Length: 134
Ligand SMILES: [Zn+2]
Image (tube, rainbow, N blue to C red; front, side, top):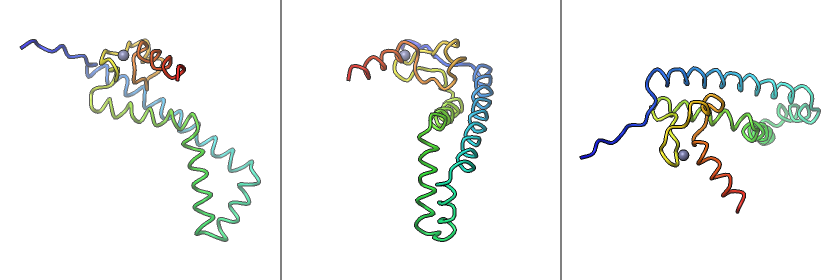
């Protein structure tokens, strides 16, 4: 039986990227709370919604919260935050740094720039080419 070559980051490398992902995550969370603050303080519509919220807790309240939540998750930062959370899960599982398409290790150079990367640069550009072609 041929020995399957294991392509994995070692513990030390995983720990280093975990630190990096966590730091990046904190930065994004700070960024998001800043965005949230600016929405809450600047918008008159939001003020009106807040008043409505206290008057009609049941229906308007959920609507308002839903909108805010949607904005939060639809934002680029929100998506990035989720991809960082996924990266953390992969670190915990130990399969972080592996391309999910071709199973090759993603280069450290790429991971340093995009710690949440799930594909190697080759597969990434392939998938972007395919998306454009559609
Ligand atoms: Zn790949």
